[in-house]
Amino acid sequence: MRKVFGLFLVLVLALALFVPQGFAEAEFVIRGATSNVESHPHYLGLVKFSELLAEKSGGRIKLETFHSGTLGSERDIVEGMQLNTVHVGAITSAPLSGFTDSFLIFDLPFLFSSVGAARAVCDSEIGVDILNSLEPAGLKGLAFMENGMRNITNNVRPINTPEDLKGMKIRTMENPMHMAAFSEMDADPTPMAFGELFTALQQGTIDAEENPFTVIHSSKFFEVQKYLTITHHLYSPTALLMSLDFYETLPEDLKAVVAEAAVEAAAYERQMCDEQEAMLLDELKAEGMEVTMPDMAPFIEATKGVFDTYVGEGPGLVNPAVLQRVYEIMAEYENR
Ligand code: EAX
Image (cartoon, rainbow, N blue to C red; front, side, top):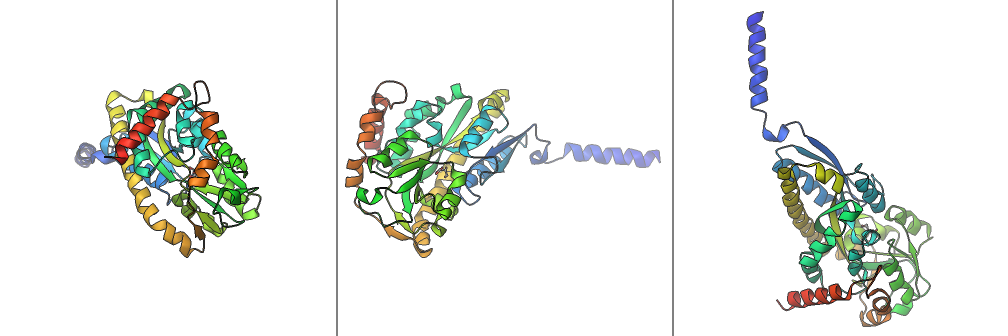
């Protein structure tokens, strides 16, 4: 009997010594979320982040990922990170402008000339400053993922001129500059949390919304929206964020792991955006959406008033020096 017990002990010890790194008991079990659905690049990026954290930490960090608003709207996820009850979030820039004026630059209509130029701004010193501006709000900005160039869908009529938006009840994100742009075009902007949007469109309480192809397709807006207008009126970056309270509990070596994994996950997420954007316009047409691609000059002219109102010195405004630097970075990118 003593011999059997001895053998058993040796076996257990051997197993404990040779447990593969990835299966060590996690020291930190954390939760991360997006309001987008499972097939959207936001969630694909969170899953990649989770895999990279596990791999690079030797299993010490286990990130559980949630999609489709399971942990609430983007605002709920942000508040969860501030309370350290949610630890990671992939959050579109617009709601973040409510926590720091630094994100307002992304809310100027038609500012970004291309996705590449927008990414160059996000990856510049301006982008680092923007992410760091969230720390007083209790959020650690890790990297910029992407939502993409936003377009308009609606159920009323094809849109070919700004006048076609007149009186249209369009859902916007909860952001005053987005609302101002559509008011300048005599539309009727209604801020609404993303999770309520499909039902509002289905019930007809809202005529229109605006989002990148990845969102329009993954959230099946083609089922409740007839017309799609390619406008690229806003570029939506997505901040990969961590609860600052949680981040500060990490030892230095795991903070380095988080930083490295975030950059790699963000690059992967942008690649997913590129792959999906390349094929989704045809998919949306195949789903029956009627597409218009009007000249944007009249829309740009019609929304210039947003710059007059929201660029200047002081709270709630886009700093003119930052705007000038953004133009410089975009020019460097386009002339590279
Ligand atoms: O992708 O609320 C919105 O429209 C945002 O684009 C959100 O991230 C869903």
